[in-house]
Image 1 (tube, helix red, strand yellow):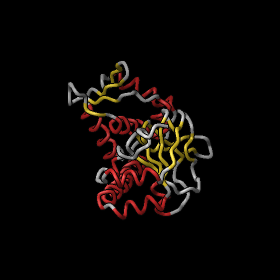
Image 2 (tube, helix red, strand yellow):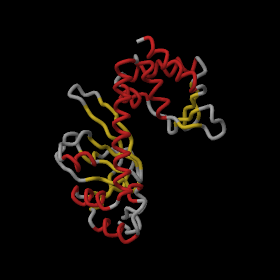
Image 3 (cartoon, helix red, strand yellow):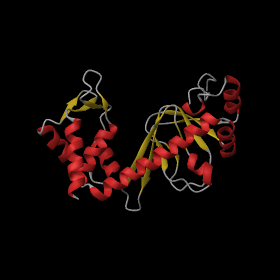
Length: 232
């Protein structure tokens, strides 16, 4: 594998490190390629290394005893996972599946902790990430306790979307998620997602485009979510 690829230089956590510090960390990592649909770590695994995505995209997910999958988040190039186990040495809180071919750097927990302790900016970023995860989980718990499936789907679509470049009042989701992915994110079945997508299309709130779906009126969707929460 090319040394040009084998580097942590584009990992956001290490943005404040100079070239020498990056090179030192590079030598303390092991490097691997993960193929699409390959598991990188398993749920409840006992390892505590931290993994950095140099290229590609992976997904954090949990599979219940019943077989239903819960998708937690996607992790893209420049990001990392495994930090919780590196901090508390507990089993993995999720499994990690490559959804594209990926190049991954594997860093021992002790190296990771030393790097975070030695570089205040990296420490601040890690703290912000953990706080963001806590807030995100709190929001999801709130949605599961106050919203029905329909409005949880609306909330997930808004979370996945980004403002359209040509019209900031519209939201684009690209690539478009398949129904089973949305179902796994909001704990329902894909048939329910398909029904809601058709309902949104009939109402003119969702439009399909090559390689994307467009939310034509995200403000209205947000208002519907808020109204549903108030009625709970």
